[in-house]
Image: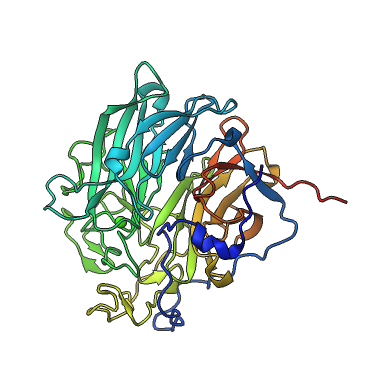
Length: 474
Ligand SMILES: [Ca+2]
């Protein structure tokens, strides 16, 4: 069964607003001036559509339907289980993916509330020893301010929490096991990040956006001594010997994690050429300068960390994340200087009293990490919201083995990038198109190795499977 085919003009009305991407600016973006040197090669247009495309999506999991599915993950315990997350806070388990039936595993909807934008439940990650300790971590927005925060209206918190499954039923989480780890006050329900993954080093990595709005509205980027925004954190949730205590912060639940001793900003006394107090540095940061890295993933072969940073008005960027990397936001959008339109100041909001100045100039002499690949918005804005996937190492689709699979939420175009060893100017090919868009995450079938995708759109709610296109009829 195929998804309903919708005319392109209907998409904007049909796709829910997932505010990963910028809202359409009131005026056309100002052309990028050469006020500061471009940081790298200019983004390119995505590859043209080829006909016929080599792959199509078909409905997976026997047509099981979900409400705004946002994540797909299989645990590292050798079972045939697959977990599907819904934005509203419900986690379903499919006990045997070959006989798909869903069971409610954990319901966080009371904590999540009524998430708007791209807020809500974003991801879970199973502890590497999940088969023994039954621990998993959830990354979501909580509909209340962190403890100790002054009373606010419409406030909520970016929340990392640990849970364990029931000792008697592996298909049930124990809600009472919740241990809050990070609860960061957040003023708006967008740009909350969304990536969560364990590295081969056993540490937990999570990604955060710049809190909200357009053009780094709250000025959260390029700071390592304030809060946890606009970057990727690395935590030692097992608190192994040699790890360090985090510096105190209102967002941190004391005693729930430590800092890997080689985290890049441990002991830092300066950042971007300005002094910082090492006792106030957020040593959790692993990399900084990202706008809204909705999805991250580790390649188990190269150990490289991939991130997809959703852009502002012009560019989307695939980044290879290095320890201590600074990817430039909000001096840069991808490799190019960020130039907000004149009526959209960084701090004052649209047309606000503090609308100017509009461009942020980096201190002289700084260099920034460049995207591995970035594409320009195209098709009258149809390509404008990057959804990161993962390096496919399966064998079910051999032509895609050793490729990074990703797509655009709006256009539904799905691409494969290679090589995946960090070689510059990688080759990107369009391999399929999800009619109507709506893909928000990629996953993998734990039995077949197939590439799975969750379609978030209200006309869908299904999990899709990428399969070779049928041979054209003679
Ligand atoms: Ca936010």
